Length: 126
Image (cartoon, rainbow, N blue to C red; front, side):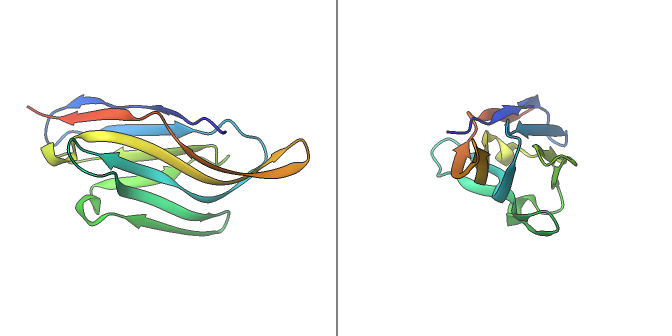
């Protein structure tokens, strides 16, 4: 299975910012979906933001609580996805998980993948 590498969590005061990064170690691939989910204590994992599709045919979706505060982006090589989180609030405290789904070339054959990162903790507190 494809392993994703996350970074960027931590402790921040309310109103502060953090940037999460997620890398996929693949060469030839195509995404169906990539983005970030979060799980707060005692709650189910929920969507934060995602990009569906790839290349020039994509749709970005944000959960209502983060609209206008969080920005999802990717690099030019499409191997990284970033979540810029601004105006953070205590209710943004959660473990954030990167998710990527698609197909990749493995020895000339295309294989499907549906991978989650290990999770990175974000704590918003004064």
